[in-house]
Amino acid sequence: MSGTSLGGQRAAVTNKKRHGADFYKCIGARGGRNGSTGGFASTVIGKDGLTGSERARLVGAKGGRIGRRGKQVKKEVI
Image (cartoon, rainbow, N blue to C red; front, side, top):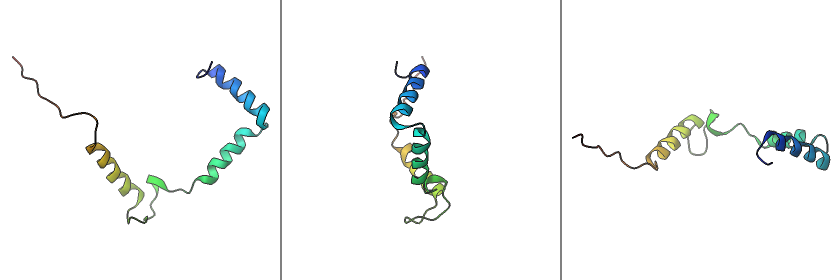
């Protein structure tokens, strides 16, 4: 029953039984410790001399140029 809400509830019960009642608290804390408030929301100037929003703009433009869709071909109307 993977991928259903009932399967998720059963998996949560199993995880708590195997790893302790504070299983989700521990993995959430581990993820929080890994964060360093960087990324695209950062206003700190990075090693490349850009802030996060400037970097996001450049990366997004690069992704837009490498789009998977081909050039649009105009169809002639008869």
